[in-house]
Each structure stands twice: as structure tokens, then as C-alpha cells.
Length: 108
Figure: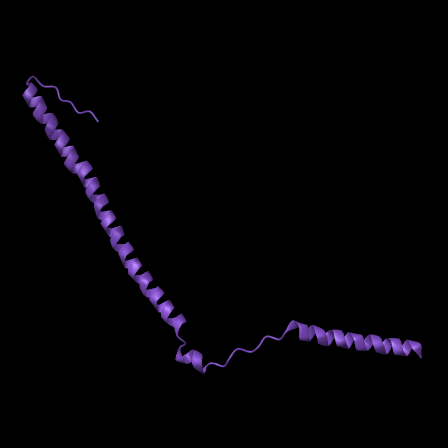
């Protein structure tokens, strides 16, 4: 940025120019820097709050997963999942019996 002033008195031109530059710096540049510092402070505050909230949630999760609660102790144990091999084995045996009966009836 370039600021200049033309008058008959060079000393007066310098004083006016410096006054304009100082006013600009204090009103525009410093105001923008102040606004950015305030925003940064606000974001740092929110980040700190979120870190505390996250730490509390992690602690709660660790506490809930590390020891069984009274509700979990009273709950019925999970039902066992049927093994596929026993199910398939029964089907295979039934199919073998049908084939054997068919073969017997064909021989007669």
C-alpha cells in the first residue's frame, strides 16, 4: 500500500500521511488481528471442552467394558448356535436312507 500527501509544507504532508497510516493500522489491520485472536481463543476453548467430553466418554466406555454390570450378570446366557455339520449330517443321513429305500424297492 502506498500513501502520499501533497501540500506546500513538507512537514505538514508527513504529519498528515502518518496520521492516515496510523488511523488505518489501528482501525483496519489491528481490528482484523483482534478479531482473529478472539476467534482463535474461542476455538481453543471449544477444543478444550470437547477434549474433556471425549475423555469422560472414553472413561465411561472403559468402565462399562471392563467389569460386568449387575444387569449383565442377571441376563440369561446366550443360546448356542447350532453347528452346521450336525444339521448337514442329518440331511445327508436322511438322503442316504431315501436312496437306500429306493434302491431296495427297485431290486424287488
